[in-house]
Image (cartoon, rainbow, N blue to C red):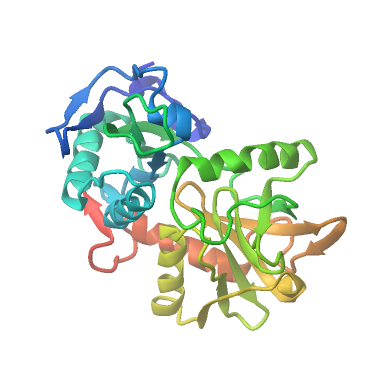
Length: 340
């Protein structure tokens, strides 16, 4: 399919091959110069570290067209920093911040015609990732790695756009104390697959995970951080050592404080507090904010006052402001927008 044939306004959130992707290999203690290639296939030894012991991590960010026609990315430096943290925790060689950003620029530039037009609601999703590539049969880190970045045009992550979601409190654990919940490791998402399929089969959009130590505190969902709004307008996000530090969530908290003049708080959030909140949203790169209308806790329905028809008023202000910053209609803090 050519980019010119795409119905941008009706894209789903799925993979579509684009023209070129970036590839760099790590051997003998050093990364090579990296190349752009048209080949989307990966050939691996049957005993590759990633296949045997899941030694892999990834990032997710977007390129999009602003109102004035520029192609930009949103805070890719934070993705680079988070991937370095992930690699260090997974005993993988780090890909420097400078090289990460260069790979993003090269990948977007090479696939520029695949960046959806302004106003379409779509974007060019970028997936940087790294994995152990050489044969490893003993339980130990690989010695060779591959870093790649591919691009694919996508629509909204959740079908129905801003329609409020129904989520449930999950009986499964997402991450263990002192584990890998705070990094973007592939194994974290593998652990959530059974739970998300089960949730969908039972009519829920997502799972809310509790801390696995005491099972009394709210953590995050399988694919997004959580944001709450109190009845007096305070923006609250859960704090935990096993939560992934979402770039979108961190940005929304700064928007709430600096642009909207709201009080913000990052703190442990108890499960029994859910009934006291006025609004709830799931925040991440893919969806920005998806409003939650109902939380089901083992048959007990907690219906948020914001309802099941639209975003709550504070959530909507947060969403509109951050999207305005991303799309160039609202001035951005220094360094947030990188033009390609």
